[in-house]
Image (cartoon, rainbow, N blue to C red; front, top):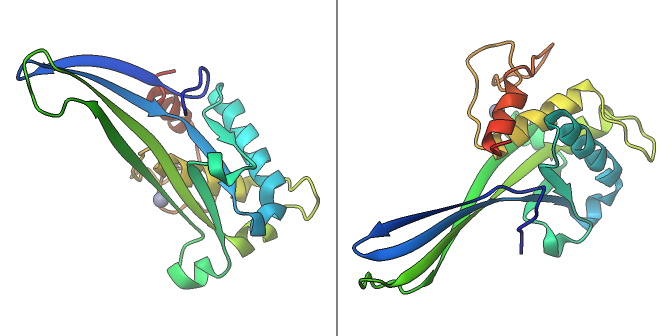
Length: 190
Ligand SMILES: [Zn+2]
C-alpha cells in the first residue's frame, strides 16, 4: 500500500454514471530509489530529497533502500548527455485500477484508484562532477536545480516560458523558485 498520512494526497470523490456508484481516489505517493550499482549516489539523492522536502514544507518525496518498495526510480546513466544532449529527464505516469462490478448495473458499486509515480534520469558525470566527492555527497546549486526541474516534470509540470524560472527549458544560470514551490504545494493540495 502506498497510502501514507503525510506523504500522499488521497482524495475521494463519488460520482454516479448509469446508476453505478464509482468511488474514485487518487494517490500521490512518490518513493524514490536508485539501483544497487549506483548505491554510491544514495547519500547525494537522500540529501537532495531532504532539501526538497524542507523547501516544500512537507514530505512529498521519500527514499527507499529496497527497490521492491520504490515506485519512482532514479536512473543514473553514464553518457546521457552525449546520447541525448541533456543532463536529465523527468516524466510522470499513472495507473488506474478498477475494482468491483464493471457492468453498469443500477446500484452496483465500483472503486477506481489512480496511483501516480514519476521517473527521472540523470547524467552520471554531471552528478559526480557537481557534488563533493565525499561520503556525504553534498549537492551544489547545479545539481539542486537539475533535481528540482526533473522532479517538477514528475509532478506534471510543463516548461515555463519565463527564462528566469526553474521550469524554463534551460536551467543554466541563476533561476527563481518563487512560482515553483507554490505549484508543488498546490499539486499536493498543501
Ligand atoms: Zn524540462
